[in-house]
Image 1 (cartoon, one colour):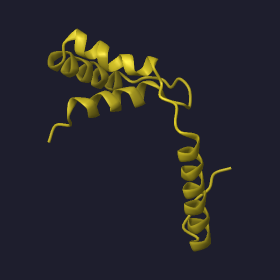
Image 2 (cartoon, one colour):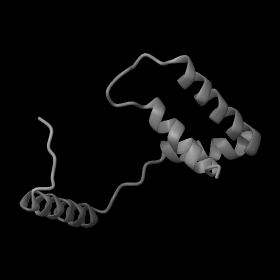
Image 3 (tube, one colour):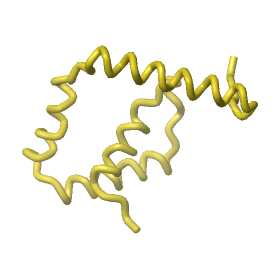
Amino acid sequence: MTPNPGERLRRLWLRRRDPRGERKRSAKREREEREVIEEIAAEFTTEELQEFLEADRNPIRADPIFKERLREKLWKALEEQRAEGSGTYRD
């Protein structure tokens, strides 16, 4: 099953913004990225793509109460994992 265009965009974006820094890009990876870009270009108009990308320019600020609740839930989940011995940690 072919992923939807939004999923292909997400995969391409994640590949391009590798937080570990620049890695040597293989010819295969370059070819895969070109294929994804071509697929996307065939399915969307320039205007639609610009509208999609515009969302990055206007970030939405999260509600501080929501952020605190989320932080507490995540911390609790980590503590539970650690208590079960199933958590893996990297130094």
